[in-house]
Structures are given as structure tokens and as C-alpha cells.
Length: 447
Image (cartoon, rainbow, N blue to C red):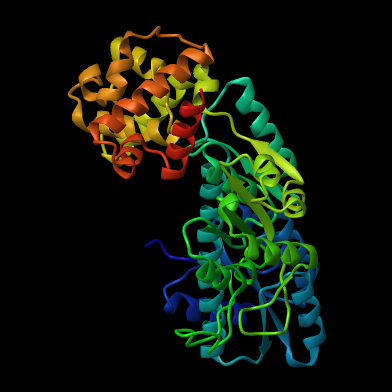
């Protein structure tokens, strides 16, 4: 590991020498300056971890130097040294952004410990900034490939509403990337440093979901051995993503509506409401307006959630994005396998473009990963699943939604036949939720 660099700014030569000796003895690389003006020539030229500066110096004083260093790098760490009688000046420095202060005369070990703490703090700052950059990169749409007009409208809307506290409802079939959009909303907002928590409202029984969302008190029910905050309060300052909101039981819809109206929740077993500050993003693959008409979803809750609606198009409605998605998932598979990307031949590409993709982008990702592993030097037709191979006779650039739906229907029914009508197995093979499979089969019966 390279040595951490410390800049000492002190106009008394003896004190500079003492500080240099102390810090070099701790393994730091030390730069020294006899004035603030000299320090400002050194600071920009080196990756200074900590600046240790006297507050009273001839010419520019320590407070002015602090201002200048913060202008150069607002995340820089500065420790101010001051006489015991001038603590008020040190407090003023803290208000201006100094990390800490040391009074003279100081205890050597005390000063060294403060520098150690400052260096550790700077390292954490650097790691946090790197993580934030990675999160911004990851959720600034690279995982949601799409140059089609429909996807560009989605990206534009996400950018407009991300840095607000408005409730958002994301609609789209299974596999279209609803959670990725939810995460993009969070990481492109000022809430990005706070938690992003997600819960699938259809995956938990009602009693457990209630406890997960609203929390509970110790002894509220069998197994409640300690208090639990619940997701609303655990997501404080951040975002709570309610996936598959259309599956939420009616009694919990009532509690959710009240929570959204009052910005407070009452834990199970308690009568005391608790305030929360979390942005709510919900998603569903159901047609909630039809669910409202059928009496399965509360109308008032629907409008409370649906302040901003983001509708994700299914893959069959944006066929022009398919080649870019295929290339993206080939690159991703290569990265996962620690190897180089493979080419894909025209026959395989035509089959992939002609297939109906009932499981949307999620199904495509699984398909490409499988093909990448099973293929040789290039991805060919034989490395694709049988249901995709069967589409190779379809027009390569088919864009008619009716023909695509016909292909989708045929492959779903063929998959069911291959599993002896085992719908759970068929849904897994298709890469879609079981509820989505039932919904599509119902639509085919009505056709």
C-alpha cells in the first residue's frame, strides 16, 4: 500500500520539525509548508490525505487556507491546530468544514490518533464515492438497453421524476425490468445514499407481509421475540419498492392506504403510530384498473400509488431493440465467464428476432447465457432452446404484433405439452411467473 500523504502547515520551524518527525515515525509521507500560500502550491500537486494546519500564521491564516482547500476539493480533510486560549477559532473552523482540531500544547499520541482517524475517514469517503459512481453507472440505464422510441420515452420520464418524492407506479409484464426502473429512480435521486428496500407483495402470506411492512412489537404474536421496525421505517430517507402490488390482500390495502395518507405506520401489537419518510415505488404486471372494476383492488389506493405512471413495453412491442439486447447479454455473459464475447451467426440471430419472448427481457437474458455456455466459437441455432429454434422459420424482421403473439402462443402451448401440462415447470422453462402463465392461458381460451 502506498504511504498516506500528510501536509503540515506551520510557520514555526521547530514545530514543523516535531510534527514531521512524529508523522514520519507513523509511516506517513509528510509535506511541510511554512505558510498558507506555500501550502496552496503543494496541495494541488499531491494526493494529500490530511492537512494539519496552524490557525494563526503570518499572511493568510488557517481559516482562509481551509476555505481555499475546500474550494479545490470539498471532500478534503483538514485538522486545525490552535492554542488552548483560541478554541473559539477552532469551533469556527469546524463550522467551515474542518474535520477536527488539536489544541497546543498537544499530547503526541492524541494528535497521532486524530490523524489516524482522519485518514481512515478519508478512505471511507473514497470507497463511498467509488460505490456511488458504480451505482450511478449501473442504474443510469446501461442494464435497460433500448434505443426504441418507446424505451426512450421511459428513460425521459424516469429522469424527470427521479429526484422527487412523488409516488410512482410501474406497469409491465413479468420480465420487462420493473425493478431495474425502480432502482434507477432511487439511484438517480437525492435519496441514493439511503436504503433501497424491496418486497414482493405476492410472495408472502398476509400475516408475514403485514409484519414485514409495518413492523411488530415484542410478543405481538408467537415468534415475535423482539421489536421489528418494518420496511417502511427501515427505508427511512430512501425508497421502498412494493413489487407485485396487485397481489396485496384487501385488508393490507386498507393499512397501506392509511400509511400513504398519514406518512405513518402502526406496528403489529402496538397502538402508537410511527412517522416515516420513504419514497414509495410500486409495480405490478396486472391491469390495476380492471382489478379495481372487479373489486380486487381499492380505487383510492390505486390513485394514491398512481401519481406518476411508468409503463414498460413488452419486448414484442419493441423488436428494434432485440439486436442491441442480444449483444448486451453476450457481453454480460462473457464478463461472468471471464472470457471474451462470442459472435452470433445470422441463423441464430434471425431465430432470436423472430421468437415471441413471452418472458420478455428476463427470458432473453437466460436464453443468451445458456447459449453462450453451450456454444462453441460462435453462438449458433443449435445452442438456443428448442422453442427459440422453432421460431427460425419466421420472418427475421417480423414486427407485426399479431404474428408475434401467435408465435408466443404456440411456444407456450408447446412448452406445456413438453411438461405434460405441468404449469409450474412450464413457467420455469419459459422464464415467466406462474401468475403470468395463467393469465396468458386465460387470454388464449377467450380468443
